[in-house]
Image 1 (tube, rainbow, N blue to C red):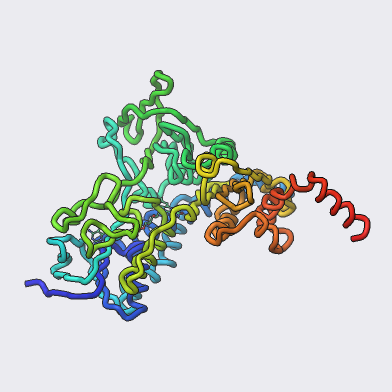
Image 2 (cartoon, protein in one colour):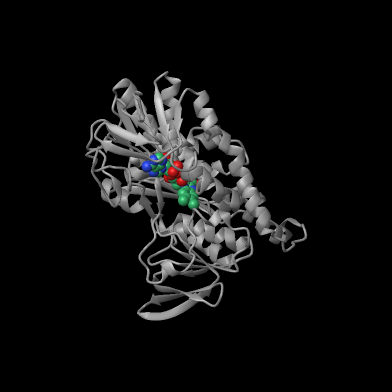
Length: 475
Ligand SMILES: Cc1cc2nc3c(=O)[nH]c(=O)nc-3n(C[C@H](O)[C@H](O)[C@H](O)COP(=O)(O)OP(=O)(O)OC[C@H]3O[C@@H](n4cnc5c(N)ncnc54)[C@H](O)[C@@H]3O)c2cc1C
């Protein structure tokens, strides 16, 4: 017979969201059971952010070696040992894994059950021979690669983010199906590590980002030698020879073939809602994920859903943000509503692409009269020194200067977007971004210059011109 556990909180899924809830609850001395059916750390640590960024770092190193000449250093074609790149990637995972481990969470006071969890009724979960009847449940089961029903795909050994980082041999020709952030990051990284790469995207690559900035990124990716096939549909997939794969595609009504050695499916994500007993627990869900209220509650009032499985923006920092709101709601009875308007995101291609707030199109619709401020990387001394001049900061304000959104394509965009994320969360105006002092030479100065340009039309006003003239003479 199974033992019955009655914690305050039971968390299903020990990824970015679930671990954050468990650690925070334990810190407040609340009893927590944490259930994980796969690897502790979830997608981000094992199959997502961490291995992808480690691989990108290796690829950047190879790229720098090829392009060292512009710094006066002899360029060399790097000898990439793909097995050792694989080892580097897994070494990085290994270095971070202790933070997410059973041992660490047990030491924090969390009861960890390493098994698959399933609701058996509205207030009970079964996992690994235990029956858990908690005051509140948090479902944080994440997502997995969505595999589209392409004829023949199931007949080939296609790769997803769960198998890609297990490769110890360099793919000869990697065909990436899907030109979203995951597809584009991995396409560029593999190209720089020496594979031939073709990306097939049914619509536009990186289609959720601002096209003006996307074009900067795609130009570089094409320059790296990635073959981009946009507005191209995959019709079918078949085996070719012993180890090859042939993809039949259609563009403008015409069919052609792409032959490769490996195929990576990066066509979006599917929520992990299967075998969870959601129906037994009265938890509504659809193909996007679990249905949640503004306060992340499911249709079963005892149960919350957070992170990728809640069907919204699918990022690690969003799962962490949700976790904080749910903790606030369960422990302090202060329901919090996620504000998606201030959630930034970044794609770690080279150059990087990052965004927060409203896009130009959304801002036009919501605010009508808007101002768009742009500042190119080429005008920044640090970008010149590092020869990273491809890039643009684009900032959108309302007519009073209140910041509505920002996008950046360029080196360190993922770091630089933080200043705009702070500005949006504090409802700042362009003037606030002019008013701080940035050390010279840093790329953050670009954000300041973009903000400063908001005041530029003012200098054309007669009164302002008189003051400027006065200051010039006597200042
Ligand atoms: C290649 C790739 C790169 C990415 N890069 C980034 C990035 O750079 N930045 C970023 O912010 N995001 C990135 N992401 C997205 C990020 O990984 C996810 O948004 C994040 O992991 C979601 O966290 P989560 O807690 O919702 O789910 P997860 O981290 O996936 O955790 C869910 C856990 O639940 C477990 N589970 C599922 N069902 C059950 C069950 N019934 N019982 C018990 N356990 C169960 C799973 O095994 C898993 O461990 C990337 C994703 C991929 C695939």
